[in-house]
Image (cartoon, rainbow, N blue to C red; front, side, top):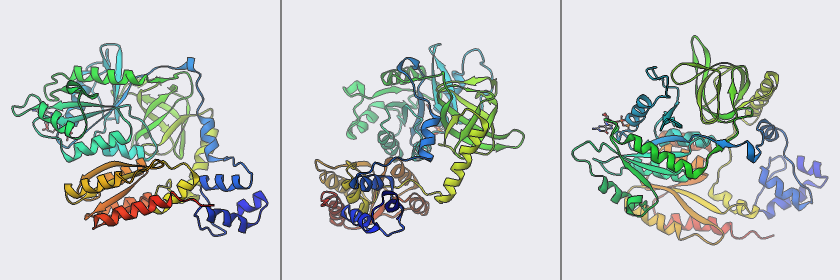
Length: 472
Ligand code: GDP
């Protein structure tokens, strides 16, 4: 109705156009951005979105090529439980604290920076595991540049190792493999290399592209070499940022501290954050009262790839929220209030994710090229069979991509991955856990349960054919 009024055409004409896109709408229904664009185009109008989206554009200043200087990589450590992620993070933190200030007690603030080779640095995210990583990604945050996948060499590639690898791959993250616990008598790194190659992950020593390093997180053996390899991987990425502008970055964690008020750890992505800067993150604004590094030392500013604790927010933003330095505190407050209002209006509506029923419409709109699927099943045989058959459904127009497949019930981590990669989840002879079901509902993730393989294949095929036939 609103759109009809704006374009001065009849409501029935708009409804008819929507129907031709395979979308049955009522007069009061709100259309999403893509549909609006298409429908308006049919009537010779071009849509410009203003408001919330425009404000984001204004907040972040564009860079000229000459403004960019190299920045340090940001690294996440992932792997199976007990394979040594925490030990690795602890060892690195203790052994490589930034020069000159050794001896200081490092605190867990969510991330820390270490010096390597005296003149290069790496920032580690201090919450190990792919769940934390994917949860941030599901909120739209892209903070990690390289993943270290830790695998205990006295054990094997385990379910969570596979999960970690798939989560990293879904994010297009380069991976470096750390074969840990090499000090243990039963350690055998070649066995791990073999298991990886069975997953189509070929390590460098065997002619592949993945760097590996045998290490002991307990004794510290070869950890320097691991860090070198991480730096090598990062070099290929040519990471750059402009330090000379208002800061932008991501909130890593935030809480209310009794004595100090709201304390948030942020990771600066570009620009420089300084004491006194007006700031904004999520629906909260403030002014930087003080900045602390991971040793609890006060600092005056933090540049690209630096993690820093910020005092001065008026509330606790969420992990994964984008943060911005802004021109003035009133401006920050105004935007924060607008966002709060928007959140209320939309009832915290999450971003719309793909569903099988939606595929046809998205294809009609013309921007749907890849159907991402996560498969969970009761036994390996059926997971593989399903995965093979679904991949074979790929056509020139739509690629079926299996983002993750594994044996076991549908977990919250699967739902997070689906959220972050806009995927649907197929459960074969398995169900979601209670937590996963709740999260899937909240995030509006399409979870389909089947007990017969061909039914699953038929249904996906039908959905994909729906997308192949936009008839006007
Ligand atoms: P996480 O669950 O992946 O974070 O694993 P942890 O870092 O907590 O390690 C699990 C256990 O393995 C702990 O008891 C560690 O002391 C032990 N561990 C970790 N790395 C090594 C290593 O390189 N060698 C040996 N011998 N033990 C290790």
